[in-house]
Image (tube, rainbow, N blue to C red; front, top):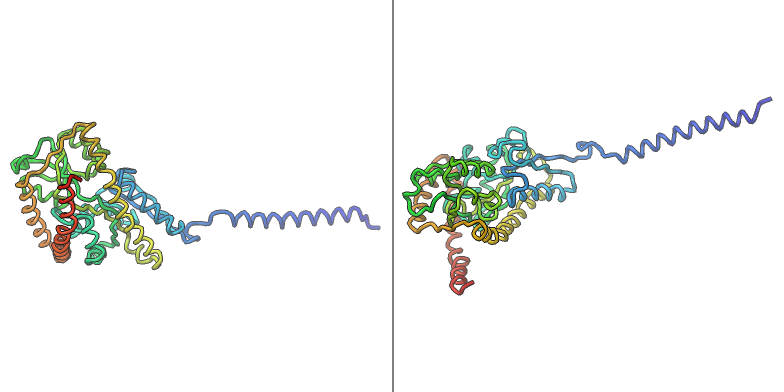
Length: 375
């Protein structure tokens, strides 16, 4: 006779073990489905964006942050962009090299830092006595400038975008008032790009330093003068602690368009939709950053003068005429360096002439009248 109780217990035990095992498998499957999948399996990619700016530096560093954040949000996290400030991953003046070497995927910088690769790069950031930011953007977007930038970048494996602008910059900080051209002879000034070549034409010496290295050089007397951007950024760096004479207007950087570079291979692999997202984000940052500088410069200048004893010095007309003469020579020399730069130079200068005629009639004449009536 079979013990039915024992049988029932045995069956119950077997059923329990089977049910438990099944439940465990289901639970494990559910749990696994809730775990984040590997980034590659989900089609996600983290991009490394290197910059020429100190971490979170106003306008420039924060502009790079915004580009990264907006790309991440606009792509729904399919691309996450990690920002590396100056010297966190690469030298701040070697951002384009980092893309070529595979150290980074993107950069936020000023392309005149890369004139060693081609003098043409200057024209996509700014050149002495060149176009203002609004004129520059008109050239890029409607005058063939972006296509020329793309052609240049293709030679170095980079896809280029504009990613901001400072507007017309100040003339710089000097350890004495620059009253005549004689004062430029023997001057040691931190000033990159073709603006530095103009200083050389006037008898001075140009030095290229990353932003974070400027104040120590001024304090130590390694340099006599520096340009950077304008009141908002210059206040943040504290140049007033070393020198007090703040000159205007700058001749060397009337636009200063910051560039966003991306690995061309990465760009070529993007879908049409993602290309539109990256492009739109960068172009949106152009107007945002320019507005941000215009919103902050006036109050920063007021602080420099009233709280820190900074003295404004206007360059004389004779000095400015000398700036212009030297600038024309420097730009012509750049154009003669290679065929690509000549092509870019001719396009830029042709558009500048056209834009200047309209700006003189429209914006400039209005602002002259506005000043005349006391506004």
